[in-house]
Image 1 (cartoon, rainbow, N blue to C red):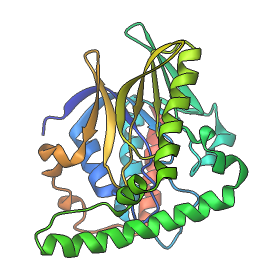
Image 2: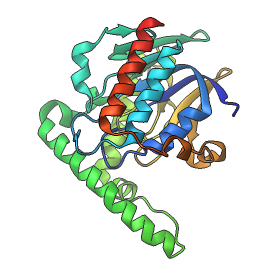
Image 3: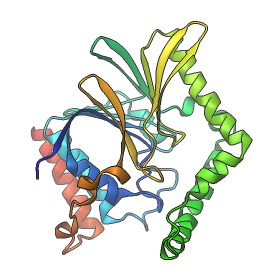
Image 4: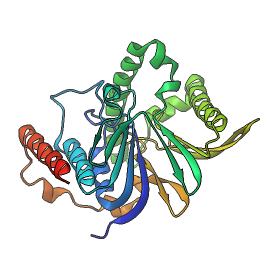
Length: 282
């Protein structure tokens, strides 16, 4: 299988360890590409909702695939988010081509690009973290309900619907929060003379030019792997939003041969440790 070469990939809001995570689809996507650089822009592992009773093989296989990229020398930045904020105590940590950071600033073809998760703009995160955590649990429950609704809807020939998107689009406060978030990111990016600003956090894939009285910037958001199943890709001077649902090649990748004998959690952990040992020797 010939993999699609990509110069730079930005992925955020995977939420490994939750029921809503589409780890299998993400794994197919990762197996379909050959990135030169991978930026994991926060909330990759959902430490807030992590439950040792729920950690499917595909979730560990995503981590193992990423560690395999690191072992091959692919530069990987892990940008911390709010759901994996525990990793912020390890900012600056390096192992092979992996680095844990709070933000990334890149000079891409002479243009300054600022990449960070975005939870710093969330007032709820700053002043009522318990409410944010409660909301995360409710969101995960809504995603589970949505899957049941979609199963019935597709059986009736009506296609898929997104309950969370309908709620977000119908609640003025949610729409205002998203708009304020995007404008704040753009305003700060412009004030610091960046050409691009890339965020995650709000699960809204986007690429658009934004402006204020001081200048213009391109705002981008990598979306998520709960509902949208999207990432940002940079190739030959252009940014684009990757959409898994439009990628027939990735969808056709067969993972079944990897799962004839599904390893237990101990075996998965041992495999991961072995992968890290390979990284150390590389």
